Length: 43
Image 1 (cartoon, rainbow, N blue to C red):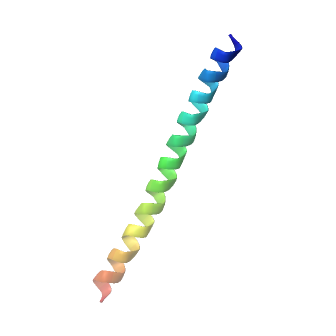
Image 2: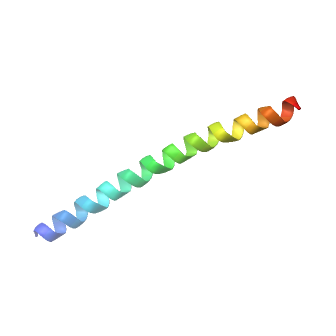
C-alpha cells in the first residue's frame, strides 16, 4: 500500500513540476520573442 501511495504522490508531484516548468518556459519564450521583434522592427 505504501508503494502505491508513493507512486501516486510521485506522479502528482511530477505533473505539478512539469506544468510549472512549461509555464516558466512559455513566459521566458514570450519575453525573448517580443524583444527581437521590436529590435528588428526598429532597424
